[in-house]
Length: 356
Image (cartoon, rainbow, N blue to C red; front, side, top):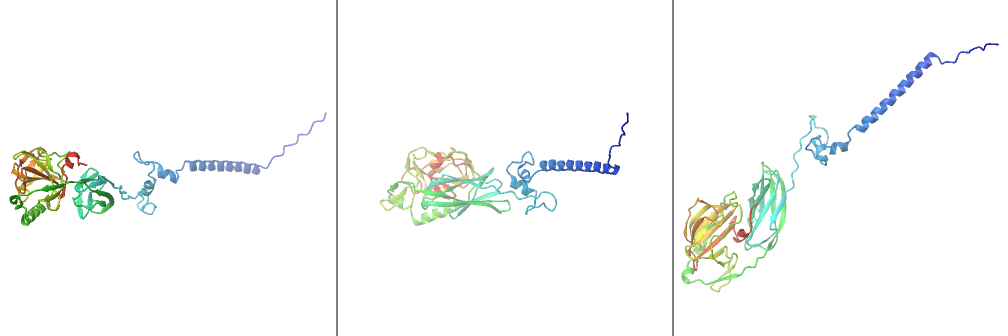
């Protein structure tokens, strides 16, 4: 039997086999590198992630513009120092509340402004300018509407400033002045009483009151409603037109008259400092109290005063007795309330709490 001859298997040269192995290794390495790049690309943060991802436990999602801007300079590029650039805080919009937004002639309006971060807030109304009082992030004040104020739409402006006096924000708001129906008071004067009402007496009293209402204690002393200062019927309302001895109506009644017996007790309508005690040509023996924040009250035609200037009194404390001094047809209390020198209805303050 013939043996077959075994032929050797054909094989590639050694160098060819080595090149093939190297090529396989290179391909494998390239595939692994590509996969790593893809994984890193998927995990890398995008611009959207930087904008909305909180950078601290207190960061808020949605503050993307602030987050991006804080890490760049004014043009959006990194700051020269390599650290995040610090931007000035964005001013918080002022919130203005007028209470009420429609206010009657001779009434009071409460201005309430929410101004976080402001050092001071001023109020411009008519031709006057007031500095509002701070209470936390709120600035507030009360303003009187004159009895002869023009009816209709009006405006006021509040301005928030920094500690250096730089204006941070200003806001103008409209309100409405409405008419209040008030009766006419017909008064009969005897010759003896009428002799008190002379041009000289009127001018002297005007000058005295101008001085008394040129300065005010800043801080608010009251914390609730005011009280009626004496017991008795209202004989003449605030704001009534005045007609003397059948003549034409001239001027308005600047206070509320309360009929009471001679010597009846008169008490402070609210906490205050006694600003002045004396006798006026027309209003007679008077006591003026300063309640702070531009608010003063007056008690007139007294028979006697029970306090002196500089005393500090509480609401309900005795300050005098009812009388008929000055221009008066009989014993009564003429009770006034002024806001920055403007006479307003005092009864409103017994029904409404003018605190922030």
